[in-house]
Image (cartoon, rainbow, N blue to C red; front, side):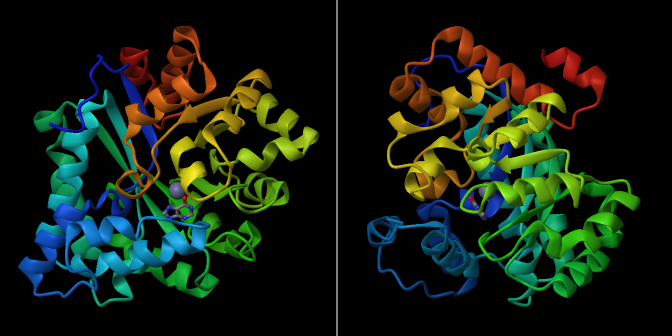
Length: 326
Ligand code: HPA
Ligand code: ZN
């Protein structure tokens, strides 16, 4: 396969992966054909040429537009199975996978269709790909708090398949504080909690995610370095940060991979992991991100092993399964 790394990739867990962000141009056109959906691009190459982003919003516009091809349970199962096949080649042994129910329910696709389709692929993942999985349901932070609450209620019949709630989409102007109530309900229902914070938004949003939402992990979090007290808090509480290096370059969170704060985060003693975010859009899957930071930042083998080990430490696996991976 063209995506297989030449070396043997380190075993790792992927903790920051939007399943809708794994929709490759080939599958997008195949699903468009299958569902009679017309894409505003004539060819896969035309579509690929649109993958040039100036910030988070410019990416999100394309990310939401391409989801028009995802309509049936089969579509979601095929999407997840294609991801898992590529993840396996990248050394991924465990994947905690985000999905965005509101991006589908807004188009008339019921949440049950999404969860059943994804679950079909995930339930077969250990047998078919040797990968254990969890699902994380994300709320779109640029939608209302009421919409998040409605989404949580619609998801109640499926909570046995959902491990955690998350928060994604356009960050600036949509602080974690907006979603206190739905996170409280999620915690009462026994779910873990994560949130994107400190990608484009300020360090103050990371504080809010910790103190108001009570999150177990921070997604991205690279801007925590702007606040010394915040770094001390994250280190003291061993709060994992799911960093996405190639995403940060493509969305211009950093100018260049060689300037990425990953080494500074490791030096500060933060529990950092490396992840792919939206690999179909950002030019690399899990191990591609490991290789890219190795080459651009000169990380040695021991540091790469630390990052891989951190990914299991930061996961929501039960202790026994985690121990088997470490
Ligand atoms: N940030 C916020 N929302 C997202 C992202 C991201 O990197 N990817 C998909 N939705
Ligand atoms: Zn993300």
